[in-house]
Length: 400
Image (cartoon, rainbow, N blue to C red; front, side, top):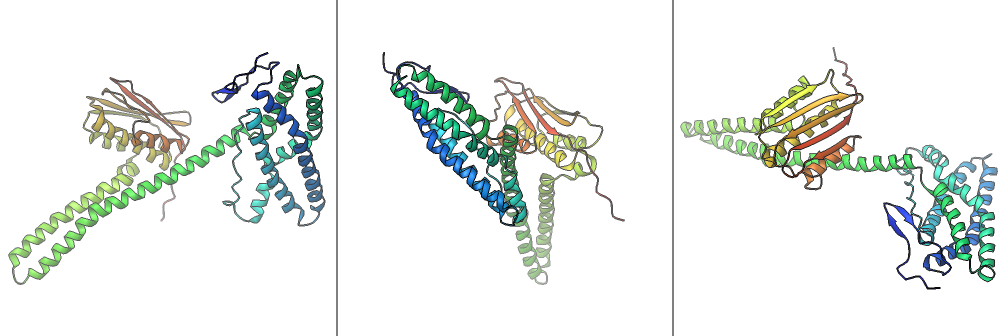
């Protein structure tokens, strides 16, 4: 029999565990599994004691006010035990189980809402069930492994592998998060961060544009008018020239404010809808753009705004980077989704990881359950498809 090489272990691909085959020689993975099965007994004893004692005491006290907070504390403690068990399974069994999302107790409302959230926590209840059924299994695995080390050592690796596989099934079944729910929670937490970051970036951009543009121009205007006021009686001709210059500054400041307002939310989008707004932004593109919008009704204002700014950003990219001679924008509705397709015959090569612009658009759409797909082979053409959830527009009641 040959000893296993030190490199023998667990090779993982795409998140799946590929264990080395069981063999008569005791390799590193077999010893890890033996250690896990031997530790099962003390861990199971502690877990069983915790469940029986804590649940019995809190159950008896539910007749009083103290019982439910104590039961909530028991479930939170069970979460800690589950975390330790997942870490032990990762280290000794090679089981990769995602950690459940933490309970958002700090962001909850009052004390009763936090209490109810802890009491209905499925992760805590499944961990209690896991600890409850582990005692007989821990006794069985401990006795089997200890006996096998003295009596069945030639075939013990095969026995250990079978017992360890049962442990892997139990860990995955009872200690893993609820896949769909946890995935959705993680997505929402990530999307909330993207929305906050995007809003902060937009506020910084507006502040910068106001400070560097209209505000600076208005300061110069105020200074010019102050000088003109001083020269009004002494040198009326110079004062008139200065007033004329101030008038020009006012026009430029108004134009900059209009451009800034259009960047925040264009009036044409509010008044006439997505078709007219996209035609307006397409007319400012340096490449001829054909706009086709097949919408029988208008979507919600938030969805309409995201669609407008997505197309606007894509057309700016076409103007600056594509080298295209023509482009098109198509917007239509399919079932409960709003679809946008922007095409150009430029040089191609656009990628989501190529810069912050495309990546930012993908994150912004992902924050509202949208999709963003870029198909841009080198040499072109480039087709960008965006998909947004459709929500019907609700008009605010007009004041009389």
